[in-house]
Amino acid sequence: MRFSYQVATPDLKHSNNVTCMQGDFEESIRRLASFGYNAVEIMTTYPKSIDWERIKTILTAYGMSVSLVCTGELGLLGYTISNPDEALREQAFGRIKELIDVAEFFGTNINIGNTKGRYNDLDSREETEQKAVEGFQLLCDYAKPKHVKIAVETGAFFYINFLNTCAEAEALIRRVNRENIGLMLDIFHLQIEEKSIIEAIHRYAPINFHVHLADNNRKYPGAGGFDFDSIVGAFQETGYDGAFTVEVRQIPDSVTAAERAAETLLPIFQRRYAYRR
Image (tube, rainbow, N blue to C red; front, side, top):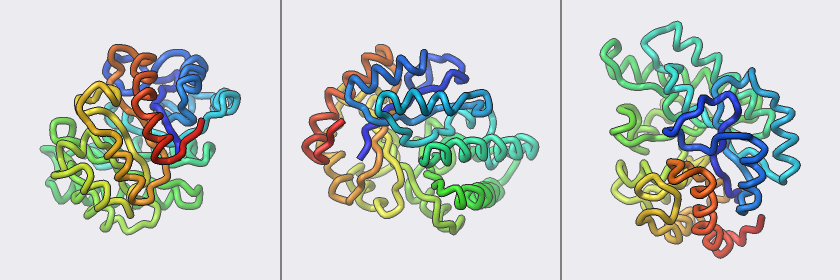
């Protein structure tokens, strides 16, 4: 398994609302490695502006790998695969393909969260769903020869109005009918949309590609009320051996959030997975 933290590349516009560590990339990696992480989930928006060879050199120097390439911020910029504006929709495909290329470079996968889009006033629900199905098919076909998988992230109703539950996402995944598409289980969203986090972990284990961890208040693990030993134990019981990425509000700041998350999670990973940095 890999213990991961979400990190921004230099192109990401600084914001207090994003869920990743920002600032000097090498300094972020140095700190995370010292806290016990062995991987990062990359948040990026303009991939062609980044020197990925340099990013890889920095990661290698600190013994870190890339657990996932996150597309979330693209959706907030309007790049969604079900967008009623066909020009923006085509631009979204182009930008996501660039991120698939980045994932291929690092030998990892991508997720689709906000970039899946929303129900809207211009298209019917059926039209939005069909656009999403066709968009996922196009992206899966592009990603398959690059050995990249696509993890669909569900979101709580107050963040997004499309694919809120795992059951809804699973139904759409069946319609897409591609081998390289599955789910990403974010336990913050699961607590709101599923009857039981533990039951959802077991139920959707066969199609789960990636995990996001945050406490029940979206702060770092240990800052709220989740029983992380039981949650991580449920993943272990299903045979999950992939990456666990901390994706949280950077409160009180990124360094503190990352360090305290590690203090909470490392003993659990060591006990449950025999994790060693």
